[in-house]
Length: 325
Image 1 (tube, one colour):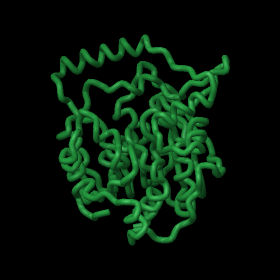
Image 2: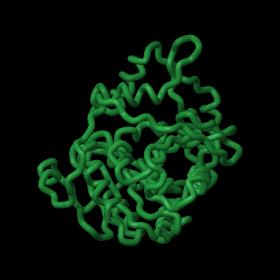
Image 3: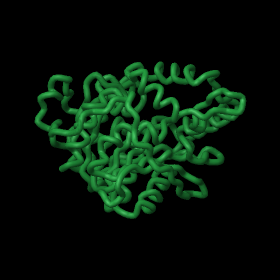
């Protein structure tokens, strides 16, 4: 990992991770076949929604907030949380429209909505936090840390730049949004006959997951209906992107307000690098990251978009070292 502002300057191979001086002694890595300490389920109110979050550990310790990505859920952090309980009280929310949180009527799932919910949760926790966010969650925590700089001690963003725009005139974006809304109204939830069928879809989405990981993640990601079939817990409307997305210039201007220490983590084999959307190139990503004061960055080899699952041991070692500074 290079200390400096350019984003993703180096790729660490498995051997380099083994000999890298960053990694201090830490507890043995659990496997996803092992049982985990069950968290406490809690709820809070934000924007007239009842939102769910889970809590592990001793709340007299510093607070660490883990924020999942789109169409994911709080319990995807279970094993990461276990490795941090010696240092932190760990909190993980289900974003609105995800997991066991309420769905927003009318599909209010814009970045600003997620940021407002997160701000409310930090107020509930009642003290400054360190935050880890993945994908959509990474973008949410970047925006939160910029707007509420005094509330964030340290921030880790995993594959979290997201899609930036606009790359089309306002009228075209608005027409596209209306078209997507109308199409979403006719969309039907896909049901799986068995939990195993849902798990197979989970495995298809990320071939690096072990069978035990797939089972664990699937069990917490689905809801069983009265007819015995299984459906994903998330609201399909979370798929929609609003017509007023911030431009890259607006996003970078916002991120200049971040005062926390920041670590940007990417996967060398992430599908994000292959999408024909902004940011589409390494140069663009570097430009975005350079706007974050003092940001450190690393790309993990043999990992895709879900770095914290794909290379669990390496990710936890990196996270523990960064948060110990």
